[in-house]
Picture 1 (cartoon, rainbow, N blue to C red):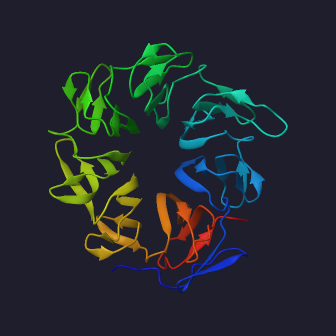
Picture 2 (cartoon, rainbow, N blue to C red; picture 1 turned 60 degrees about the vertical axis):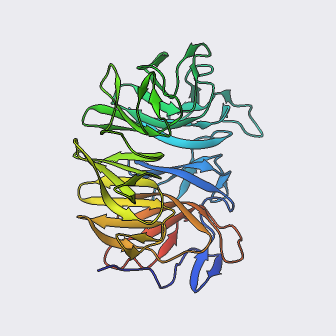
Amino acid sequence: MVTAISSAISFGSAMLSMGGLTVATGGIDKAGEVTVMRVFNNKVYVGGRFERANRKLVNNVAVWDGTAWSGLGKGVDGKVYDILELNGKVFVAGDFSYAGKSSESEGIDAVRIAKWDGTAWSAMGKPAVDREIYALATDGKSIYIGGNFTKINNATETRGVAKWGGTKWEAIGGKFDRAVMTLCWHKGQLYAGGIFKEFGDDAISKVAVYDGKTWSEVGNGGLSDRVAWLASDGTNLFAAGQFSIDGSQGIGKWDGSKWSLAAKTDNETYFVHADKNRLAFAGEFNSVNGKASHNAAVLEDGKIKFSLNELLYSHHRTIVPFGDSYMLGGNYADVRREDIGATLKWTGGSDPSKLVDMAP
């Protein structure tokens, strides 16, 4: 049975009407955009393009602990595409030049990637890469980056992927012909997805795996179009994007031997979270497995657990479980196209009938 949201969407103090739904300004800026959410140490780390969270200056990266927002110092001065935690340090990547910059401080040079140790920002190479970083991953020892860059250390030519071992950047395996948009560790190997068609002289379509020495295509022919996000539940690898499998779009599943659809949608997907028997995903779709669900859904054991009615002029970009709820990030506006905050809390349990503002 599908439970659709049709009652009030309730938030903190400021309220806006949206076609029978009630919405209020979120903790993140009006006109803000959230592009990534990650959960580390019982907190939600949020990145994108925004200045403030609950009126605090945070500059494009913020933390929600379930009660209040905080920043990582004064953040970074450009868009954040991914966030990663390793050994108590938080790594932030995107398209920025400085970290910790404010009216009182010039900050530090930290081109497209920076490390937060809980107190201060530090750079990782000057500059690390020459173009955008879209993705981060770790094997528990090293940091791997994916993006649109063509050089590391301002000298070494590469394309799309690189590795930070703790002191310097290294190219790994060669060059993709176009950008890497997402990275994921799955069963001890690094997987990459994006808009690439070739690696060196070999055809590799949109998704590849690195065995420590070389990259190879995942599946015979890979995937047909852009891969925006990869996620692992420890058994299977899942992909969100613009591709089709057997003529249909949706969430792709790689079981180690073939690609299939874990969920069928009527349009592209942007993000997927996978764990145990659950998938949570967001995108630009209006139906899931033939049932109405607008831009976000949760499946358990392959069946729709929660779905959403249409929220006009809204775009869900990311979704993560947090406690007994789901956190949605994107960019949202009411029927008058007035921007509201960029984060929403979708309550779970047996009655997923409310979206709640992530503001104290």
